[in-house]
Length: 199
Image 1 (cartoon, rainbow, N blue to C red):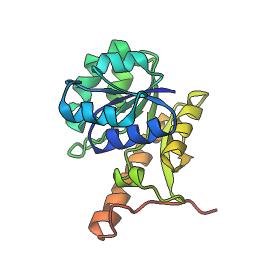
Image 2: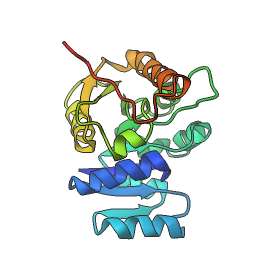
Image 3: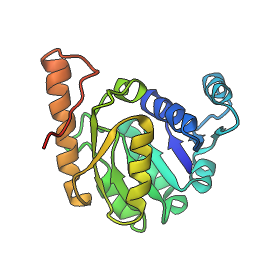
Image 4: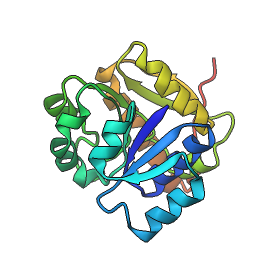
């Protein structure tokens, strides 16, 4: 699978490493592809990792993961709306200081043809780097064939996908982040904390 990752911070770089290791081709989209840290990252991952502009990464990929800072989301979505048309998009960014921490309203307005998912936003990056093999990752988004690709990407990180429903469940997915923060930071249980559904 060809995956674009916009953002090379902890979330983007960690997921990119996992996906390259799983056999996917990853295009790290960044404003400065020649930045030494980014060049070092792609060189360490081999021929299936590339550093490109945002637009080039989007055009090369089937799935686009947004992992840019939350305060840059609206601008980034609007700037690349044309390239994002019809793409499978994962919103993993959190607007921590805003009442609504996801960017679904901007995606819906700017890219109505996209298949939109909310995932990889409700755990710290440490859970992607060294996942608990029993842990679940909760996500929501468009039902249909594209869901299989999202679940493959979640599984390739080492977590179990748990689908919470369509895009109307984005608030529920985001509430898991609040629970995670309350326990990991508020109750000092540590950032490796993760959740498991028992039936």
